[in-house]
Image (cartoon, rainbow, N blue to C red; front, side):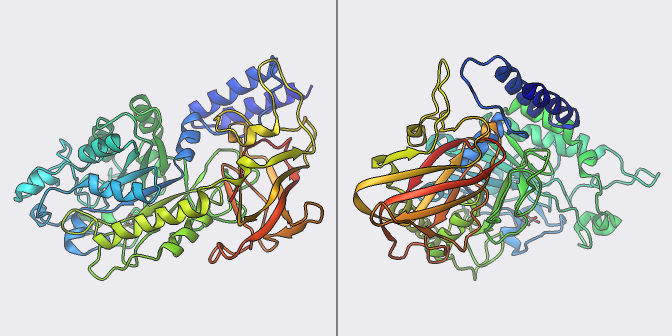
Length: 512
Ligand code: FUL
């Protein structure tokens, strides 16, 4: 009976879903569990698509805002800039950008290849407003998406592109159709073909970044002549032909999550580098929505510098300590972190940025690089009955397998996990990951430490230990700004799951 109810609700949910692949994935999960010798727990819907899981695994990646604005000093250009204003003194060097990101522990990067001013950093058939129209020889040799993708492949990093849907240089953007609406010329002649051109630079792309800005009161270039820039596109999904775009792009790029306007991952709701302590992968903004019907995980876009998104001569790089805090408040709160590093007018990152990234990488390794759970004895209050081909043992939380997890039996929504060591350890952070392929489930948990292995004290009691999701890192002293501190001496750490939508499934547990 229970299984039939789940199947029916999955069918209803799938009927509402715009992303067909997500719905297909959900049907498959239900089908599997109906006839399952492995005693696999039933999914709690919604669940992520496979590409959303892979995207989440990228965790921490760089954003590179570079283009016409780098040379004009603007944050939002007008679209009327002369192409020759883009005149780098040498061909821009994405290899240098990505190496710096990698030294900080980032797994990938996203390059802005067209911002709102519409200037394209690659030779495109869709507009003359691009690198090949500049009088600069180095501009003519510039092809950021190609060089960025090549560099990422060489470094073993993931890559993707930011291509602004809003385009102030295009006469087609917001073109009135004479009946109070817009023509479809922009999507057909410019936006979709540009996305397809970019897709051809490599089929491993993990994200396409589609910003939601559409002008509002901003007096843009072409738009300021025609007043189209003052238009706000109310229905971006229709105007940019998103369902068609999503299908076309996924045919070419099976792993590319369409961020923002694309609908497969969401803006976390601020540009300060933090997610809500409670953060569901459904819904919107900082905290998401426990009852949201669509998997819509959060990404936090933040600047590593004090200037703008684009390079400014006066900018300073934030301290490694501040960047570490951002990491804890985003990656450590079930969001991904896309950290902006602006290349300067030389087409490279300033040395100060490069140095700071190496410093950040060292901080991350020093603080979160040695997992004490690997040498702990782990006891759980209950373990789910094993199936024919898989078990749900506690040790699954410390193996490095992608597809294993600890679980109690159906109907158990509270449980304890206790780690003990023969010798007392100094502990500062606990990191938990749910097995999100079967949904985000945990609603409340607590973390305690014990110096003698018998008497326990709750830690981080001022932190909302509610949701976990893909990953949650708890600073045991409850402070993300000065989380490292002296730590706590502990012979044991106990995690109590107090409430969960269904039996909790913990994929990974780490202690640092
Ligand atoms: C915003 C844009 O308008 C900014 O210029 C920048 O690109 C930022 C990441 O997204 O919405």
